[in-house]
Image 1 (cartoon, rainbow, N blue to C red):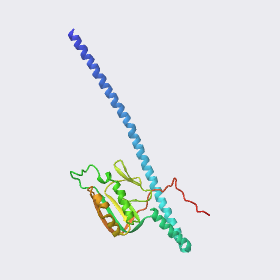
Image 2: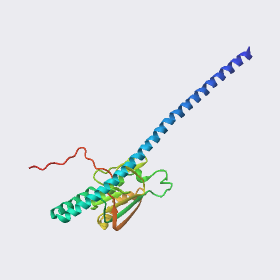
Image 3: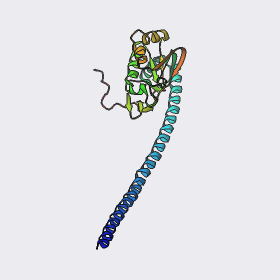
Image 4: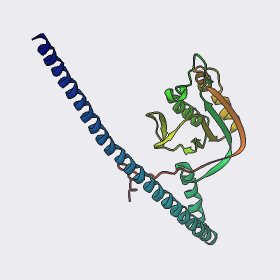
Length: 242
């Protein structure tokens, strides 16, 4: 009798183990099948992103060619018409102010990099990315110093520029960036450096977090144009009263 009971118990346990194994196999297969769908979608999104980037590059190239043709027309008209020459000159100033043209001139280059990895500053995170608001403060100080054009890692700073943390990157003009940050500013080199390095100023504040800062005065440097598209959804020009 005991032998039969033992066999029944063993049989019941075997059945339970079989059911558990069967459920695990079914769950694993379902996970694998379900995992293929997100991977396929990721591949599709990747291809879409490549296509969009290709189209963007082609559009930018076409835009550059059209701008060159327009520049030639404007130059020719300016040589023929004194009044039109003044209009073209004013237009160039507005373009520089808006950041829609490449510019060059004297200024300074500020390099901001993370601290050297130590026990205090681990290499598994970026100090400047965690303190990205310091970049905003630095840009504001450069404007106070009279900088006429500013860029960070090749991204032109304009009125609509945003500097924000997105995941593991700091987005500038919606473009992911990472340290070291190369900030270029066109203006009076001496004024820029003295404004940034003033006691208790922005550079001293950044160094207090262990950040490595280097400032170089330049007789000439180039800053690229804003590569995005300017859109105004709400603002519109006010028509002059008659």
